[in-house]
Image 1: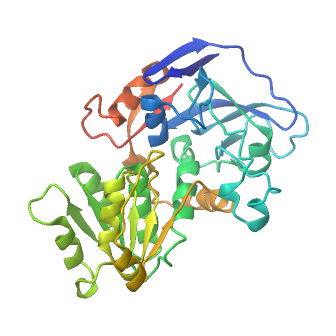
Image 2: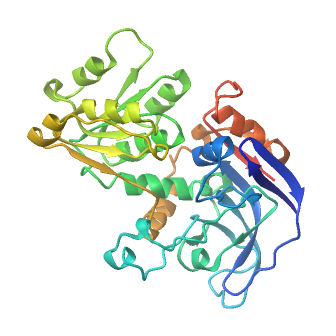
Amino acid sequence: MRQALFHGPGAVRLVEVPMPVPGPGEVLVKVEVALVCGTDAKTFRRGHPLLLEHAPAPFGHEYCGVVVEVGTEVTAFAAGDRVASANSAPCGRCFFCRRDQFSLCEHLQPLLNGAYADYLLVPAPIVAVNMFKVPKRMAPGRAAFLEPLACVLKGLEVGEIGPGTTVGVVGLGPIGLLMVYAASHRGARVIAVGRNDLKLETAGRLGAGALVDLREPGDALERILELTDEGRGVDVAIEAVGRPEVWDFAVSMVRRGGVVNFFGGCEEGSVACVDTYRLHYEELHLTAAFHHTPRHVRMAMDVLANRDFPDEALTTHRYTLEELVTPLRVMNKELAVEGFIKAAVTP
């Protein structure tokens, strides 16, 4: 079979490798579609100490496919089932799992990597906990959003987002747009903040009640505050970029007693600055959300069944496996492609 292997920053090669054989508890899937995510693009640019510790390594983890073979002990799935899964599963036994903090599990390995290939071997822990059959009427391209959507749903559990809440989402990549969609579906009023015409327009289509273009002249923060109740700031600010300066900006958007969700992960060693006066005397709540849990993966499959789930609005470009490097370069701004939000790779 063909498989894309990461050899080092900027070096991905499509090679022929032996077809894997599922062992106990494992499932072999014929990949129908693999979505390209921001983590893949970052990995392509600079590597990743956790996901791809030893090169050459397979990568890609947002997928949907059809089961072709199951290992012994697998009873929930059979050949012919269309499936999607998360990219990890908690052990259920470690210090953090015993405290229901499953996203911090000390044994999340083996992480699923290798969706950029003809076939994907899904590890037994993931099969047992975080793999799901895809409903017959759900398109593979939609089901492949299972993992990123699960992360978004976990992220939205801070700040009591719902009717009467004003949420500011800074950063309108695929994750930020999913945040806009999910928060608006909870009844929140969403202010979408970005700097790209297509993404701002898409945010409006996905439920944002107000759009703020950072490219417009004048003070962007003032424009955001004017859109909030009495100009006090948003109730919940969500940073969906992963840059320290944007973390700082997100803090400046929030009202007294509000919540800042640092959802976008920055590079290790990055430092953001917070006014300690505001933090203490204005009782700001600063938090972060990482990864997903089995509960949120289950929730994500339910949300994907919504008729208005925006998979077609988000997946703007499609590539073959041989063209994988192109969307990775586009996401790293090495190439310019008009109207790009998210790409699907179809082996």
